Image (tube, rainbow, N blue to C red; front, side, top):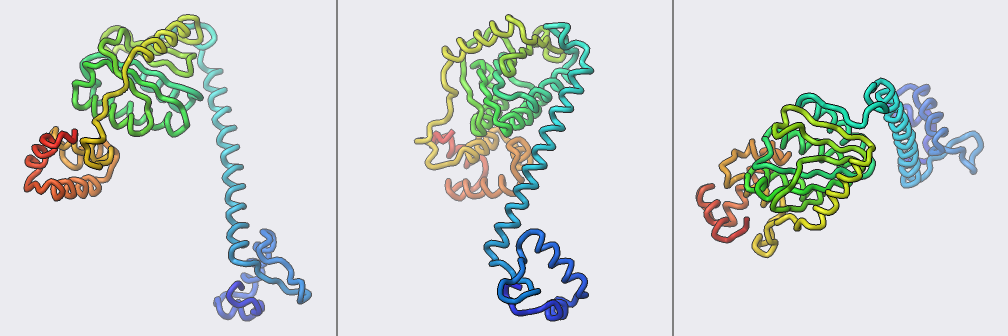
Length: 306
């Protein structure tokens, strides 16, 4: 109708090779959306609005449907949380709840990542983060960041001596986590919306954790975190001057490449396709005039890119 404004129902049906009833049904639907209004010049006929106005009308309709769907999702979320709270016999009775086992702790942290409204603050201690914990933590951090939650993380210096832990910290910093480092962290804990605190039971995370809820102790732990945050230093990232224009993603690939990781393993850890990793490595080798990955690693070290 835009291209042939004078065509009638018969001509449209013939050209499109569909029954007239289909054309009339389409007219009715388009008229409901004000895309095909009555013609002011010819009584009883319809005309098409301009392509620009028609597309804007369809976009407006799609926006309204999206807003309606978002409202339904928010209402469903509120209903789920209300039902979950009503079946949680611990809440409202106890300020300290024991979460038995690592699976229970991660399940609770997942819930917090999906429901936190303001902030998640974490203090990490120890020699290294276990590989399994790193993968789960990546997922939870991304969920929280995608919802606009502020993530603050203080790492103990010795933790970042581990290559896997450091690669995780650098990746999360690139994706929006606010990170700092201190020489000696006094306690491992996670604070959610300044209302919940999770503290491991003993030195082994597998045993579980204690969740402290809405008490003065949580306020004290938040105050401790704030003081440590002020005393800690900025996360030590590689100087951009030495990177010779490399992106953060390329530097992250370089770090894992020097550890001997395969393209598949690098892609899995950085959430990239194997093809992207392979292309990046190929470009780096060409840029470094390196004949092998080992030689590329040597050149990277000599140039102090990482």
